[in-house]
Length: 196
Image 1: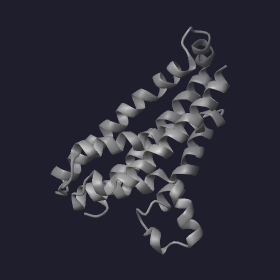
Image 2 (image 1 turned 180 degrees about the horizontal axis):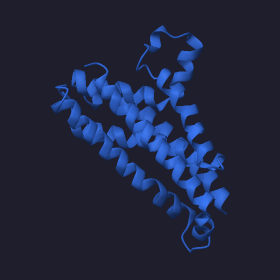
Image 3 (image 1 turned 135 degrees about the vertical axis):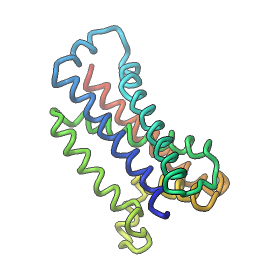
């Protein structure tokens, strides 16, 4: 029961990271990125066009896994569904930004896939999903503050198992918002420079 809500975060992270990083690299590999660059669309519009579909897939995955958790595994959701989707939006900003960054540093789909797993596996280990963060060395605990999965797991478990609201979860949501904005902005700027 404790692990089922965390699976939502893990699957959402993996799917959005993989899709975002692979799609842009694939465009470059098959040669259609140059065709996109010469069109009159702005870099921002291209970035939105590349990330928005994956954000929608991320929301769909969260809805699907939540439905399975509630009706199949009988894990009740005590908190607000609206708050869950708001938190998911903040979390997806980080995962899409990281996926976009991976796509700018990778030249092939294989590189993008390996880079995604290079980020994903440590992120899972340092998220508190398997091992409590309080039991980790102090230096590692500080590193976990840069991991968006850490905050999202606290939010999901709080909503599912405790039924807490925004008055308790706002520090995690604020951290996700700041981290997501920072990562997505930096990745977008790097992506814009690559296509100009």
